[in-house]
Image (cartoon, rainbow, N blue to C red; front, side, top):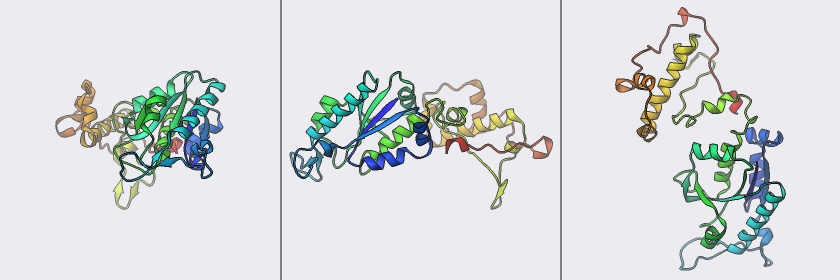
Length: 273
């Protein structure tokens, strides 16, 4: 997989992408990264890449010509690197919301190559979007100063799903949204922190009870924070029982005495960091 980012701040992207899971995946050769600065394709002495919008209004708009040339250069480089059909995507609050399902599609696509446009100012000339952009994507219903952070968020989401990126392959399968639900709460040492103890069930060593507790917590958290995720979901018989009246597990008491069975180490997702 290869990802190229078109940005006015290439060092920002390069440094961030070399950290953490994305950096480890980069070092392992699981994906490749290149950056392109539109200023390198500006034709005037000041390397101008923006101008005032037609019709008036605040802010500036990124010029079409430098962007178009940067896009063409990135696509040509990807094709020389073996990508047959580079996909150009513009990070924009006006784009289609990115979901976990879309990220999985991006990560598992054969011969994948993505050109991400990290725009600045008020955005880019619409003629670039119409002629050169395959899709506009949004990472949330909010606005940031530029597309670099959204692009890095998308890169991180994709890279961590590549086989070999995480030390524990099961970690990604337990994340929020992986199965359409939010993740359950997690705890680690000490067992008691400022008077608050780890739930007894997590110390019980009873794997089935732990599984049911985590599933129930995941369902209840999703029901409370993101009911829209449950609205279109056909609950299994077990999930319906775990939610129960008022979101309670009607089949299993979740607080199991730690003295009744062997204890096990609390679960932690160190491999994700």
